Image 1 (cartoon, helix red, strand yellow):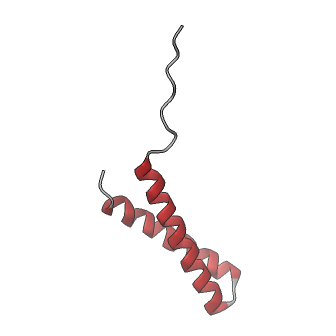
Image 2 (cartoon, rainbow, N blue to C red; image 1 turned 180 degrees about the vertical axis):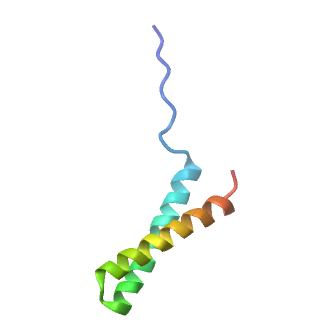
Length: 63
């Protein structure tokens, strides 16, 4: 009974796109926090930046 190993959970491209989006969100959130000293504002800015970066990197990085 031969069992084939399952494929990877994420492709390398998906991991790179998600990592870059996370880094952009982290940096944008940190800068927003330093500018306004408000955690809710920083979280909202980080989420918006990460979402936008995710769409950008998904289209820019080739398949």
